[in-house]
Image (tube, rainbow, N blue to C red; front, side, top):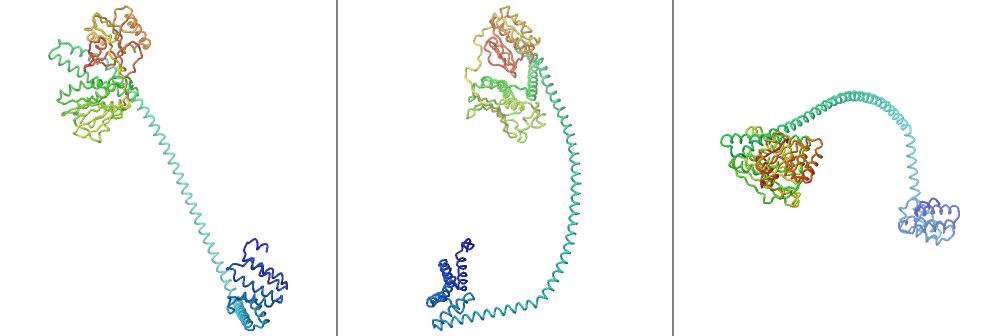
Length: 598
């Protein structure tokens, strides 16, 4: 009962208690049997335990009969068979039928006793029939045993033959697999060896190619550096005599005594010199861009005046070609921070490009701030030949034009647009183009807009006076430059004094009677102690009460020297005269003058 309780099944516990009760009755222990029956009945109170409960009632009836209580036994046995057909009961009801027969016989209820006796006989007959059938089957099985043994022996023999055949087939398959795997392994090893050899050879070839490529790159880099240095050096060397030529032709053209064919010839020479100088400047700019030496100045300037100045020369040339030339600067910012010289150069190149490729129609120049106020756009539009969409990227490359026919027909080196884009990007902007063949083109420059206060724009010196009775000291070591200064500045001063070094200039200032000093950067840069020499000269000029003007290249950072006016070069003759003498020549012409060493 301990193990039955662990299972926790009431039905199983009731069955075990019923069997215990039957065994107690067979042993004559009626009270113990009744206790087991009562416990079992408590476990079979549910409807699904009706069959087990009927069996327990039959056991209880048997216990009552053994105790001699026939009436109680009859009541219990009737309750046990309530709803049960005695003609269909199974062998489990045999003891119940026997108890019912004995009880009803004692009570004289022969009809019920006979009914249960018939049920007992039926169950005995069924048991006998089952025993006969089982015996017959057992005898048949015994007779068939010999045949089964023979069949088993035959099956074992067949199984043995199949096992032998299977073993042989398995051995053949294993041998085939082994040979196949061995062959495949050998092939893989051979392929790996061949691949390793090929990879090693390819690696060696790649290394050799990389070495050759590295040497070629080194040689190419040296060649490019040599080319760039050659271009820069050559450009500088060419600009020195060229500036002298342009200066002298400018002086000659300014002389009213020059008439007729001579003036025309000098004009041709001057125009050719301007063209050549523009080409030299472009080549020098390209060299600086390639070496990364291009410098961008950040200083306050008047954008509107700068753009208008750059457009004046091209306005006259457009009129000479019969083209309209429209300039819209109404919405252009005036005072901004940036590099005025580079902005002027970009606008100058774009207008030159538009004029070159426009035969009829006109050219327009417009500048305005963007709606967000963070940038300024400068647009140059023309009605020229236009540019195909697939060529619009190539025109911004150095020494490239749309096609060879364009180069033959219109000339040019193909540097202008490349310089424009590089300069715009160096200033934090961009140059874009929209165009269709035959409909002209529009080049748009977008630059960052940094506005400045009006007082930040450097004004002309208000204290400048006329040169009457004055002396001008020119510090320039170039003989050609001295001739130029003499022709240009001589008419505006009583005395013109030339010195070659900053030391000589300090000595000349010490003698007194000098009102103005003009210094060329080439002379200062030739001094190993240029910064100290410039400071010393500035101090001497301040002591002597002389106004100082320093000519300084636009592509170099301005020196920080107090009490000195710095004029960017190249600079036009009238503009330089205005800077020196304050004679009101505040609008530079296209006749540009560059002093000394460029």
